[in-house]
Length: 345
Image 1 (cartoon, rainbow, N blue to C red):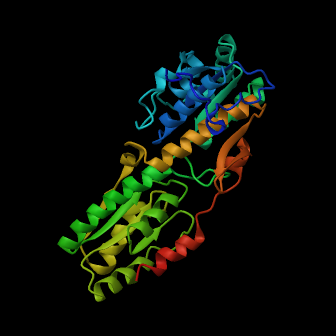
Image 2: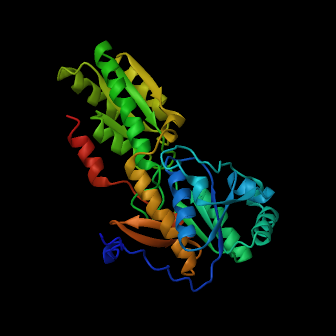
Image 3: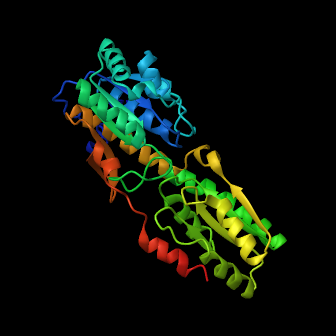
């Protein structure tokens, strides 16, 4: 008779031991706040499933700090986040809350967390969301961990933020299509991408899309510089030009387009991509980043960390004080900025 005894599981496949939990964390809450970003659902999923693997319950807060103030809380289990990793937006919904900016609003939110016996809160969002988390911890002693979820990639302390990779790909796809139209009509397209205070998206899109010029908030160069660029492009036989402008550049895309039209007389069109960059299924890089950071956020609470953002630098997990994420400036890659100019000839 054949031996039906199961062979031992190879040591490399044995389950990991429970993560150290010196704080005795038994229940954590998670919310998404501010502008949505592709990959937020992947982060929520990672929080829920990491917690479940450690015997910790998760409370989902709907509509961000606004929902926390109103007490919109519910338990989440591993099956509640099934089939969500590929979805854009956020299943927990998001909203901006003026009430949370007041001590009274934060007091009510803190009480709701206590009523639910929550040991710590994970906030997925940008610097505005981190402000709200920071004050909650400072005023009420509730441990908070920030997970960087914003397409702008403007948070100090992490190489990339959740949603950034997808936003760049979405904008690049639009640029490729507009270049085809511009070349066919011998027309200049000035394309505005998101980035109210930072030019990370604009810079990556400009290099990857072969743009002739890029304008970012970090460099307030005069718009007149684009006139020579356009004239040189025509002299070299180019049938169309692409100019990328971050929304935070003074005057925006329309200001750049008006300068080109007035200075050269060439037909110029403006395309503002807007909120389309926030939507859509997250690309693989955002899913992986969100999964790693969501897992690390749970472990951070178990280890007793608080008032920090979990980030990724040089492929490793890092922890940055929440106030550093907005008090310290994250500059664009100046080498890439130089590269954009070099390759535009």
